[in-house]
Length: 424
Image (tube, rainbow, N blue to C red):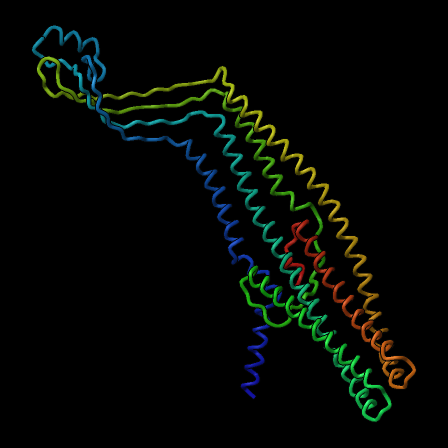
């Protein structure tokens, strides 16, 4: 008793492990989502890299300079020059070989393009985040579509099994009729041929089922077992076309790229400084001398004419126009696609209701056809057509349900609605 209880619990856990919610949640653990997350981090680092340019750069340097004439060590002040002229015995700070080491510092005070590029980087990071969500929604739609197709195949297999059982029941009675001489042997051969067709169709469907299971495992990393039910939790929330959001953020980034290209014509103000020590042998005493040097400078530069920068502005404008036109094209396509999908869902739901009724009607007709065939009122071919008609009705209903879910999944991607909140 306890053993059966624990087996039941294990079975329930197994079913839960392969629920649609589990499959959709597993997408965040797959390489595609992780790659998209890395793209966000990369975009974020791009912004940080631009921000880092506002910080001072400190460089340690060293050099050895060999000249053909004697040069002063450091800066020689007029008072120092007068002192040296009065006393010729003092070491003169002039040398052909000058060794220098020290620290250089540069700090941008104002660079217009850097401010704009930082804003551009924020839009690119936002676009990367929106792109990650869009890719996740698209993969969710693929999973739901694959599960819907899997359920369709399972329904087809159940319908074929029911058809097989029905025909086998008739086969028993036909075999008895053949045995006692009431029916020709050809009728039994025709039924066997029909059963063989069912076996072939089952094998074909099982092959497709295995392909879908492999696809789901590839997408989610989960080996699916058992039936995965699809039930509507709520209707899809309609609003703005989410598929446009990454493109719109990219468009804003391209607009900032134009501003950055124009900003290159603004003045650049930079503070620079140097702290150094120079060494060399004196010109008159050959004494190794040292001189300290410190300097700070505020400089401004502004391009008066730069053809390359003008071309950069034109290129940025063209990129912006291309992005804007692409968004316009996509908005129109999504509007048409959304309307088509909504109409499809409405028509398919209506067809599903009719298909369900058709199954009940075909079941009643098949019952009557079986009796009529055994009584000899209709031919065997006519009876088998009723078997085919019931199977077709079941197949049509299963196909319609699968198409409804596939259309819902596509609509969820367009509006950016997470399918985990739509399906259960």
